[in-house]
Image 1 (cartoon, rainbow, N blue to C red):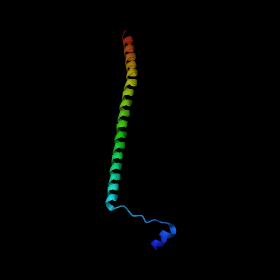
Image 2 (cartoon, one colour):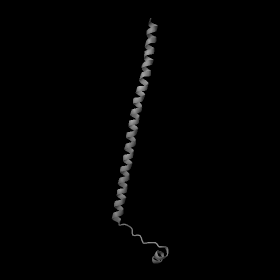
Image 3 (cartoon, rainbow, N blue to C red):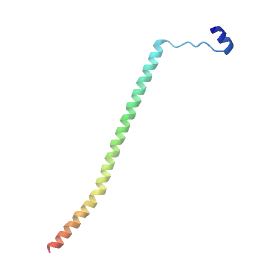
Image 4 (tube, rainbow, N blue to C red):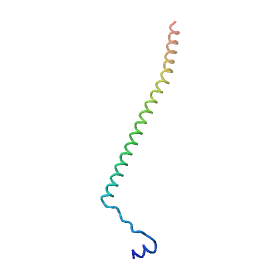
Length: 83
């Protein structure tokens, strides 16, 4: 029957690679996917940490002058009321 299928449909017999080769390829695939996933995860966490640090720095720069202006205006108003 196999010979008939080969002749009629042109199916060539495919020999599976050895078990040792399949295990080696599977372990290489598993190891590479693990390394890639950990690399992407660490890149994402580093990126988020840098963005958070930059956000905090910008908030500090933007918020501090406005608070100083409020304190100055309070000081001047208190100073004016004391006179």
